[in-house]
Structures are given as C-alpha cells and as structure tokens.
Image (cartoon, rainbow, N blue to C red; front, side):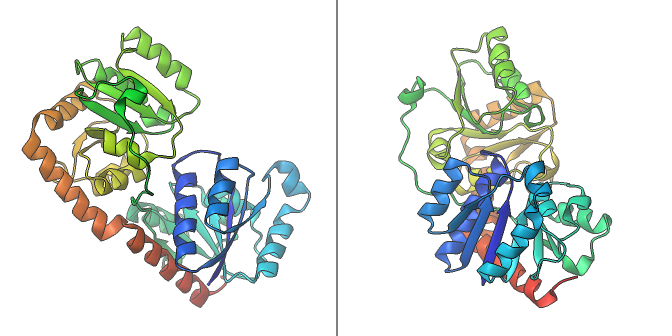
Length: 346
C-alpha cells in the first residue's frame, strides 16, 4: 500500500496531531507514504522521525491559481500512490477530480461536502458524522467510520513543581485549543467553585488573552497554569487527577480516548462526541454545556469519590481497548484504504 497524504491544517490542533500520529503508526506497519503539507516545523520533524518523505506546499489562493491541484495529482502519479488521503476540507478541495487513484476525504467534523467533490470514499471519525455525510448526498457504500486513537507516545514524567503546582493539590487538566467553542471560560468559572483545585490548560489559540483576563477577574491566577501547546500529552495526563473536556462544540474529542488510555477519570460536557461515547457513571461523567456549576459538581464528585473514579476509569479503559487503541485504529484505516482501492474512482 502506497499512500499520499494531503494535509492543509494549522500548525497545532487535534486533527493535525492525529494525522501525524497515524502517519507514524502506518510507517511502523511498513506502509510507504509521502506527505504534502504546510511547512510547519513540528510536523516536518515528526515526519522525519518516522522516515516519511515530506513535500512542503502552502495551500494558498495563489497556489491554487498557479495550478496546485494539477501538481498534487502529478505527485500522486510520480509516487505511485494507491490512495490519496485528503485530511479535511481545504486539503480535499485542492485534490482534483482527475487524480488517477481513489481519493479518501477525511472528516473530523460536520464539514461541507462541497470541498470534497474529488473524493471517492469518505471517512468520518464517528458514526454520527458518517450518517451526516450520507445525508448530504455521498453514496452510503462509500462512507466509512474511522476512529482516532488514544494511544500516546512515551514522554518523560513531569514534576508538578515545574509549573508551580503543589504535589498534594488536586489537579485538573484540559487539553484543548483556546477557542470559544472549547468552553474554557466554563471551565474557569467551574474552577472558581472548587477551592484548592489547580488547573493546567495545555493548548494555545485566539482566546488566550481573554481567558487570562477572566482568570484575573475570578482571582484564579494562583491556581491556573497556561502551558501553551504541548506535545507531551501522556506526561500531562499522568500528572493530573481528572481530565476535563468542557467543549460547547466537539464532533468527537480525541482527548476522550487519551484519558481512557491513561486511566484518568473523565468529565465532559454533552457535546456531540461525548454524547456518543461517554456513558455517565460508567466510563466518565457528563454535564450540560455551559453549566459551570454542574461541571464543578461533577469534577468535585470524582475528586471525592474514589470508588466512582475507579469505576469510570475501568470502563473507559475497556472502551479504549475495544475502539481506540493504536493497533485497532491503524488496522481499521488500512482496511478502509483497501476498500477504497477495491471501489476505485466514482
């Protein structure tokens, strides 16, 4: 199997991180790969470490006008690709219809199918996204579910003292872009109702200054740490007591699977992804979106109830092994590549 990946994502983000993770996993399975992507240093380093060829490309309007689509098609031919994997809408929109091999369009959310006109098969990260793709007009026999995985690479342990956090304090972790749809402000307001609990926010984004100002307004500066974008998610999860996904909008949320893998109790809001996978009291706890008091109560419950915490951790790990392990997800994607080749062009 030879796969050409086309990735037009940002420098950081959940989908971007997963694309790099799965490319490394496929490389370990012996899959020949080439990546066309924006010249982000961190991504380039990961491809180099996985011994996957990387071709930088800007994905700008000028690149499109200059014939970037035809160039991508020529790259697929030159590489001898069996499949072109277009990661999300912008990348898919650059892959032309006359590409000589099947094109797989990947959906990490409820994206507009107009960007996927060249796609021959479609992959949604949840069953509900796959349902949506069919509803929007894609042939059902060409639509598949392909989960993201929660298996995390090894990372050196983190001492809490590194971020001025007491070793005996209760610690909550949020792994997220600092964007309005991620509900970080709800998390901060919940923290104000949890005396003595510390919060690590691992991520960056356009709302960082607003959240820093909200911290000051809520007198939380002593208990909140803005860590910026991190690549050591495993170490961060190992250091925390509870992982929280406070999103307003979340088609899935790979952090769910990552928390389960790391055996950390999870609290999530009832956004789309969590509602599909988190069973309240069995593999995590759920609360309503934008409900700071409810979120605080659910976090406090897990911090104070060891038996419940152990129960949801055990349930989460069982679901991780069944659905979201590195081996399961990598095999699932390879099967989808095989089906794409069998189905051929539309």
